[in-house]
Image (cartoon, rainbow, N blue to C red; front, side, top):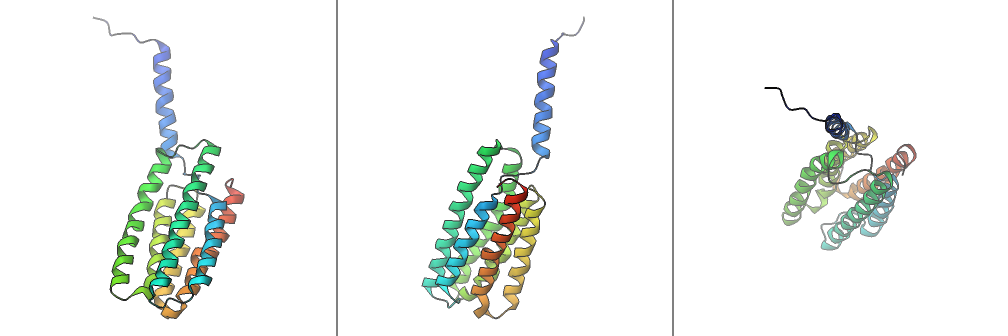
Length: 195
């Protein structure tokens, strides 16, 4: 009994779907927003100036938590804008892998923030935040363009340095990381990778 014959266009359509899916899995997440990073850096510099040195106060913590919410909003909006402009899907492929790798270190940061704040270690949060944010960027950046994991490693190094430095230097470390590193790498990403 002869096998069933399929029209050639059915094979071609299936092959094209396979190729398109393979390419989506192999490509990098390019919607990392350079200009969004610059805006996040500028807002972090302002937060650092307003908050001052880590003094264990609720005011200091509240300023930086508000800055984190603002930075997340900037990142989300600018990622969506850049993805729409480039036609990159955000619910599958490289974007999903980026998000899945980025999220666990950030979740750890949320838990450790509560632990540090409740045990009187607020002045050591700059090291914790820089180190874990850097880890999130480096792991998520494995699915992005080459400069993104490099940025993550720079944040991690600065976080380790913040733990080694006196706690009173925390605002300088935060300004250097969340401010200057975001601005420098944001400009590089914007110029090399389309905004």
